[in-house]
Image (cartoon, rainbow, N blue to C red; front, top):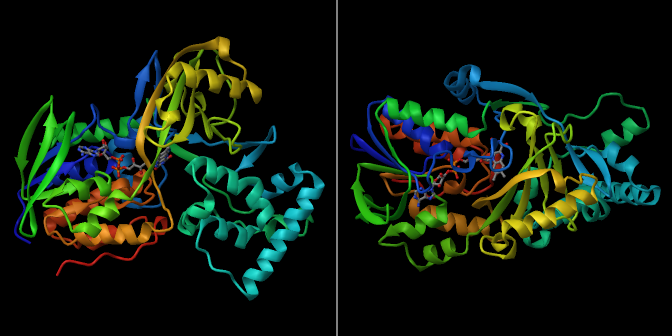
Length: 475
Ligand SMILES: Cc1cc2nc3c(=O)[nH]c(=O)nc-3n(C[C@H](O)[C@H](O)[C@H](O)COP(=O)(O)OP(=O)(O)OC[C@H]3O[C@@H](n4cnc5c(N)ncnc54)[C@H](O)[C@@H]3O)c2cc1C
């Protein structure tokens, strides 16, 4: 690859900003184009009435030493170590989360417990002797946990989150998201044959005072100080290519179309949108695959509450379809810095598809439904709401339907071989990155561009989050 001097980065989320920061530090000429009015991407933070809200609480956890040091060094004393306490609200009771089967089995009526236990044993035996294929989410769960637990918890929660039957969701989603807690351990615990509790998720996490967006505002400041230019309200519309290379980027800023060129483009825009932006476009198969790759969206109802405290949870899962939201974040327990003095803030997460009814309802309508649902599970606080406002995120969760692997491969086979273009990040690679994965991808992309390191190393990040074949490599 010829020596690269200038780079355009599309998107100022964790991946784009990490790339810009490292490229500027290496002395390259960097221009970041961000479509929204602020940096942070899915990790942006918004404030009103003295309270501060993420898009759903975002905790910083990583197993990667390089990313940990990178963020710790960036934020210094600005990061706090917080304790997590989360529960599942089911049948009017609170169950520990991650799902503690002992707690769950003891909380169910004895008949259901017996049925769940028998189902589980039958499924486990069948899986050992004649395993069934895992095509859909439903297959994966039923094959491992039996139908009763699927019907009680996994099925309804998944249907609510995705807005489609779990039989239409790929088994990959389950393999990535459900920890394979062994029910044998639970039975042995119940019978007191075993004393150790099974391993659960991290009980602690790091969180910046003032919201997760602080990390990315600080990163943007540092990238700017190193010479990067970051333009917000600059939505990229086209990535023009000439021969096998991208040559120019067209974007809209203040209602006007502008054009910039650079030696290299790093995109963190959602992959199907990038495929649509590239001109001349890919062949008919690429266009069709991109058009059929979907994202599940989220609406967040942010509430400022005139009460000093609400619960002792950081967040609560709400799987039952009768409730409008699927998760409740209690922000004071994330960090008191998010709430006005003496007050609290709640964030209710609502799964929807961009443009559907839940997305279009007015804030007043959403608030009315949510307050009545909160009251139904013992949190009646309608009279104490001081302010409320929704935030929206169209590209929250890449949809892993049964055909997603083929569509992803078709699109990546078109984009990955373009020598001076990289697509990285959560939407950019259509995989379930956490922010540390996206930061790492940004750092690796910068190393590829600045120092010629192997670009395919990026595809190994968060690989366990996505099971897709490597696209055709460049020759
Ligand atoms: C509800 C929820 C909770 C989460 N909780 C956690 C958590 O607790 N911990 C954790 O580590 N991770 C969490 N994540 C994941 C985390 O948000 C993402 O991994 C991370 O933000 C991805 O960063 P990114 O840079 O890859 O993409 P993004 O954050 O999506 O950034 C992409 C950027 O590109 C911009 N863009 C897109 N198209 C264009 C265009 N055409 N022109 C210009 N700009 C464009 C977007 O506006 C955006 O700013 C959560 C995600 C969700 C949805």
